[in-house]
Amino acid sequence: MTIPVPNVTFHERVDAALRDPILHTALDRSMSRFSALRRAALAAFADESATRARARLIRAHTLSRLDAYLEQFEANVQRAGGQVHFAADAAALNRIVGEIARAHRVKTVVKGKSMVSEETALNDALEAEGIRVVETDLGEYIVQLAGEHPSHIIAPAFHKTKEQVGQLFHEKINLPLTDDPAVMTAAARAKLRWEFLNADMGISGVNFGVAETGSICLVENEGNGRLTTTVPRVHVAVMGIERLVPNLDDLAVMLQVLARSATGQKLSVYTNLITGPRKNDEGDGPAELHIILLDNGRSRVLGGEVAEILYCIRCGACLNACPVYREIGGHAYGSVYSGPVGAVLTPALEGIAQWSALPQASTLCGMCKQVCPVQIDIPRMLLVERAQATRAGKMAWWLRLGLHLYAFTATKPALYRLAAGGARIGSRMLGAPQQGWIKKLPPPLNAWTKTRDFPAFAQKSFRAQWEAHRARQDAERAGDSHA
Image (cartoon, rainbow, N blue to C red; front, side, top):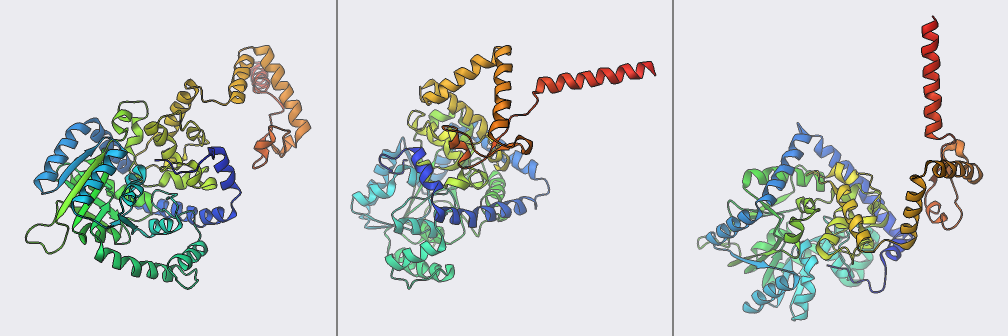
């Protein structure tokens, strides 16, 4: 699940991202546009809150009976002619896909966008067996050519400018140098069309599995998903065990909030419902359909304090709204799942010891919860995982010392008043408190003011202001009684 960045810490990746002007240009061009489109799309709902509440209830209900819905889904997939495989972990999923590929003597695979395949490093596993893998989603195709990993759940090449993509296409597919998106898209389409027609196997992700019918639903905007799942003779779909809905009515609700939250569309251009492989009287479609259901820690998360993170429908809205993601992009997180959802999900799946820095990558402003289409309380879970990191001994020594000093001071009123008085004096010495902000702090606190101002301490404590307020009230009451 980890993006291989040897000997580089989270803070070093963040520092590099903050110093990258091209990354900021790419983020600035896209982030505000996605957020504006989302707001406009949700405004079209007659009752946005009610729809989101219903979507949340569907996710909560499904996960509360996940074992039963998994059994129902498996039975209905098999009834439709498909095959279901359960993978306990990443290695098991890669092994199953490899076995299917060997059984059909697969040489080339075309692949649609799939976060699960990124989670298991499926491409690397197949290529190690001599199988050529071609990403067909345009963003995934770009990052594959660049030898990188996706930086965003729905927009894999979010971190690249059109000028960078033009240079990449010039170097990798001999396209004359251009920054025209239409020209680059046409070139990629021409290259990929040949790949679809000559591939032995197609691999896709799954947005939702429908327990009642055994169908899988894929949503996309490029048409590559439809070609990936119908042209090759074998289709392998990989999905997390949590990505189920009970029936088609529930699927309709999820599709409404997914497209609006992800790209600001009322519905994605292509909504593919696949039920089993090609039937005898059908001219198109794969001869075999294999659906692989991945656990990889999800069943363990389901019974814990952060089980709510499994409600996620991978829309990416929390990434677009997050002030941290908007500054550092996705690669700085170092994991497949970035942004607020990744800051919770990655430590939950892989353990807090390895990923203790990620829950700290948040201002706890609550924007992620506000924009989430299923109202996931991400800030609460970030606090849970911060507490887990502390219990695991992963808190920095200076932060641990600072909190102990604060606790010691805050529980002694006289000492607290003395410290607050010192802070007010310090505010007057360091900045312009009448404006409410300090522009520059001394080391080591200058790490804060290198990138933002620090709020000055109030020149009059809350206790003093409250006592003055009470005195005024008493004086007013006394005046009224004399009148």
